[in-house]
Length: 433
Ligand SMILES: NC(=O)c1ccc[n+]([C@@H]2O[C@H](COP(=O)([O-])OP(=O)(O)OC[C@H]3O[C@@H](n4cnc5c(N)ncnc54)[C@H](OP(=O)(O)O)[C@@H]3O)[C@@H](O)[C@H]2O)c1
Image (cartoon, rainbow, N blue to C red):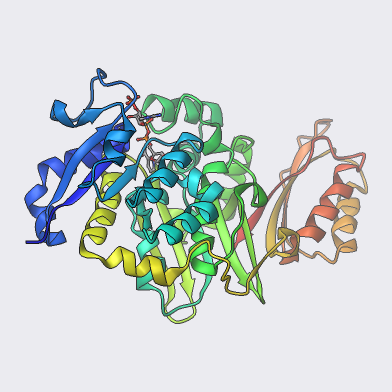
């Protein structure tokens, strides 16, 4: 058997502890798969005295990153600490010291992928990141290797388990957003500060990485338009159900001409669609390739052992030498783009759901229809629940449109929001059909 692959982990929290557990408990199986043993030589942490969910030989636990960087028998550094500042230094220093890098850090790659991959090419080392998108779902390999004969034409994905857990609870049990979030926190599916999960930022980081592999476009996360789930109201979940849809937070990318449109937003998905069936904290990625057609990848998008499964798969690929070959060929975050540019989402065509709270006055419906017609938007269906006789309250009016350009739809909504009969800002979602 060849020499062992020497490994150091930087970080031993949820993911790092899972990786250490797997390396220590399944060493024989992993050695067989890798053709050489995977030797865990150092685990770098902040607090050496913390109780951890894995038993580590005390000789390998250290606070000093230099111990790992200067060990000539360490071939790979796994950056599993999170964050973008120190983590970036750790990655760049590891590459400069001739170590390969495995990371699960989507925020870091989305933010500094270009710099990190350039540094890796200069150092002739490899960066692997299967765990950075959708945790245990092998979507990076699927895109970079298994589907490499295709031009991907669209990606629609549920990439944030916390949001999907909350939306599933709201749809299935009719509970409010705040209650569903509190449950997610109690069950450990949401952080104490859930902002990055529920405002679409986490999904945007992951979409930026998928778009890089699928289309060769570099989109900074702040350039990806995103809407989160915090504002979703129970009334819209109910109307969606009535109309045969369910609301999902989707990260989407499409090719149109030489352009790629990217966004993260709550979208109404038909209840019979595969993505609508993805419940709880699961992730799913639906890809369309010009050769293969439609494919769906689904599984646990986070958690200790699912994420460790992806990190250790990267280690095996490095041990075998496969990862180095793929890295060379894929030319990710390089100047060699594939000719696609990122298109503003204003141009994207979609159907739309529009809910208005309208005073029951003569002419108000006609005004709304006129505002849509002026932008060339035609109505596919319209539902107004009858107000009790003599009721002076606003009543919900739900309109489903035919396909329209997002920019034109937004212009119509601006006009509608200013109509005297409209009592609250319009609520709208794009509809996936
Ligand atoms: N959690 C998931 O399910 C999941 C899934 C996919 C991807 N990820 C990504 O994986 C990465 C790690 O996530 P996690 O949930 O495992 O984080 P975590 O539980 O917060 O663990 C972070 C670890 O990093 C260590 N650390 C922090 N700063 C350090 C420093 N300056 N020097 C040395 N060690 C340091 C901490 O040490 P101490 O323990 O001593 O404090 C801790 O062990 C993140 O990039 C995350 O986005 C996580």
